Length: 126
Length: 153
Image (cartoon, helix red, strand yellow):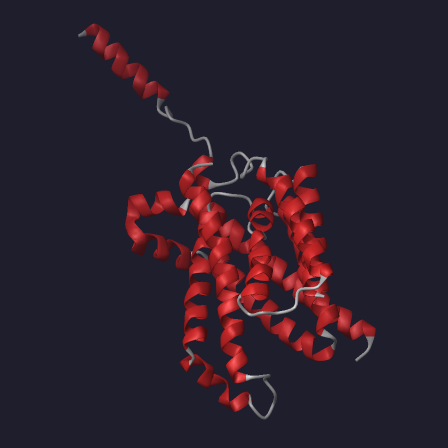
């Protein structure tokens, strides 16, 4: 399998996983603190609100696509490349997407945290 | 940050690490998945370690969603990456796997990364529904009328 195809697979894993993560985060931001929602509407109310949120459902779909893309990409190349590259790049992509789409205040501390954790995960997964 | 929120973050780390280790323990019994063994893959669901792993990962997903409901994604992901460290420790002492010096270095980098977010705020002001400032006295005109009526009475 050529390098181009392998890295296209890794890019697909990173992009779909990141879309899944940010959509789920956006859904939870909209629903609000689940502890407070449970106090007000009970556990059934929490489950109903989460399941009825469109962004949550689409996010779950993207997470599933990300998972199966990872399985397919793992069959194309060495796990020592695919595993660390996709895990650590997803951390960086999440920080970028959270800044741009979720409008989170990603200050230098959070960027440093994302970089260090991405590097650490890379070493753990290789 | 309240105690309840810290407990939820610790639950994310605990469920993620123990869930993955439990699945790994169960899959050792099954052996490597190949095209020949693929049809028998569903039999792993009878393994108690796999059942425990699936239950723990359901717990992980519930606590992860709960954490995202009060904290930013860029806070939750690094803060809960402590689960990777717990996973390495469990792999070393429970599964008796060999952990290389590079993996311990990875653990050190993650600890440093977590240290960066641990001291900062967990949420961007106004990003979550419960901490948005909503107008408390919207019908100001009505309130003025009530006060005026009260004064006249």
